[in-house]
Image 1 (cartoon, rainbow, N blue to C red):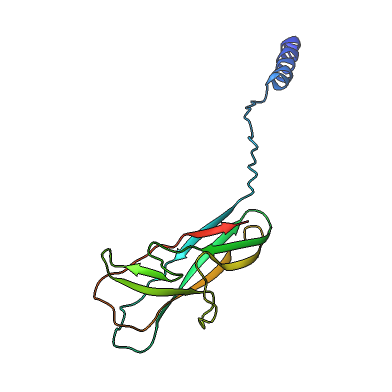
Image 2: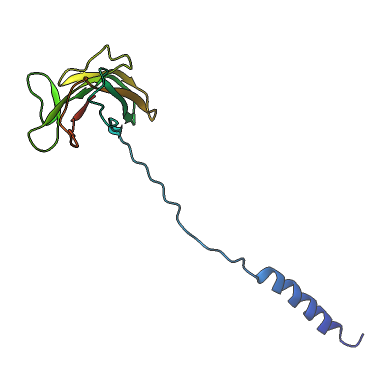
Length: 162
C-alpha cells in the first residue's frame, strides 16, 4: 500500500462523521383541559299535537308528548312541574284560536288519563343519574265537545327544580 496514512484518515473520518450526525427533534405541547359542570337541562322534546278535532265524536281527543331531563351529576328529589298556559281560568287550561274562541284541555302523567296534572302541579318527582336521560311522558286530552272551527294553541311553562 502506498498511502497507509491516508487510508487511516479516511477510516477515522468515516467513524467521526457517523457519530457527529445529530437526530432531528421537534417539540409541541399537549394541552389538558377539564370542565366541571353540575347542571340539569330540561327539554320539551315532543309537543302535544292533537289531530283534527272531531266535534261530532262523543270521545275525548288524546295525544302523547315527552319531556326529557338530562343532568351532569346525580340528583335526588328532583321535580318537573307544568304551568297554567296562557289562557287558564278557574283551574282549567285552554287553547285559544288567537281570538275569543277557546278549547279546554287537560294534561296527564299516565296513558290511562287517570292522573291529571294540576296547574303548577308536578308531572314528575324522582331522581336522575349522571348523563342518563329521564324520559317523562305527558298526555293531553281534549274533552268531547262542539268547538268553533280554527287553529288553537297554547304554551305551557315546564319548570325543573333540582
